[in-house]
Length: 552
Image 1: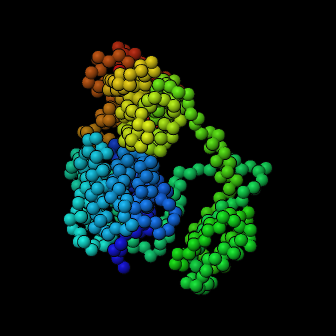
Image 2 (image 1 turned 30 degrees about the horizontal axis):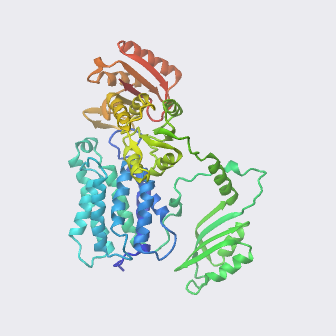
Image 3 (image 1 turned 180 degrees about the vertical axis):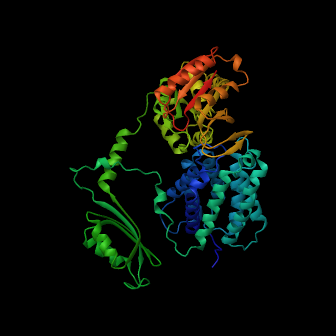
């Protein structure tokens, strides 16, 4: 039976399907990277973004469509990470904004909402580029809207978006030469197609069980050392399960979950929630002996999912988190937030005046919420943010827009060397914000950034023939050379700087995988090869990139 009315439950269900779709193909999307470097994280970013939205949706049943839409939009905006994640969150925020005041909607009204989502996604990008996820959004939404009838079903709408999204994705190679040269389609567009297919597939599944409950806490980690051999089990276990009622054991249609609640109370369980949907029983309870709950439930059916958590650990984690939570810092004119990876880079940025260094970079893009937490810890008239990565810049700007105090200025640093150059001229005594921002931006623009890493696949980029295992040099975002050794790659890359003769200083940041012997060797090589330039060396400890350079 086709879906003619979209209510809150239906919308939540297809969003969960979309999350399953992108998560299933996350690694494949990650690998659709133009540059052959091990830093593809589009799939991770899009997955985390949509999962953050779902995690925000209230667990209550029968909520109006507009309520679910509002929850999802807020969660995805705050949880967005990476350029693809930010653009995806803006698209869904536009879709959800068009649904806010609706109890239910038709598929045709959802098509209108998608058009609004496209508009908001384009508006979120300062210089929209065609041949990207934006194009796939727009062309698929416009095509679906043009081919729908007033009484079209939700299934028909999603099928139309998928049909055109597939064609649009293939065309990204024709629009962007860099994609054609690397022989890949746009990764963000491919991620969106996975989401659309997941949404459609969710409507074809008979089982209404959430595809994955664990997506609601995708990054949770537990410190098991907080429960030792001497710890007393004070709080018991939080036990949750999904049980498929079995006809061989019970009549699913006649089964009354209130009887189960009474049995659980007799077992001295508390915080009991039992809900039956069709032949699936959802159960939550707190107990000292989780095995008793499992034994009881198995009298009526078999498990689809079981989750048991030690609440002493949960309590200890909460206490530890509260103890380690960033305290409000003393008032100052400027608060500085920056992003870095590697202990050396973190210490360096702190020495240059950073109040908060968010751990992140390639393969580990922080969310908008992490920036907001950093802002909350500061007590400053002005907050300056240095993203230090082209794939984090949009997230930082989104966090600045979400920050209610509106005193955040994002300095658009796209690399760690740019962030270093800008922070090097940061002067807290410059009280005029405009002057401060001008100085920082000028320093950022004056530096040439270089990156050395290892190629993970064969490709042809910008006329440079790259083979797996070679070292590649990326200069201000452009792949310029590929050689057999990192030292040769570094020297060749530096020589390609157009105005090298007018520059005075090479600052080298050594990665975490470089040995002391290699560091000494490359330092001597730079001093001998570029004798007219001074050379400074820092142990950055950054991942992925063996060497980073700032040439000033």
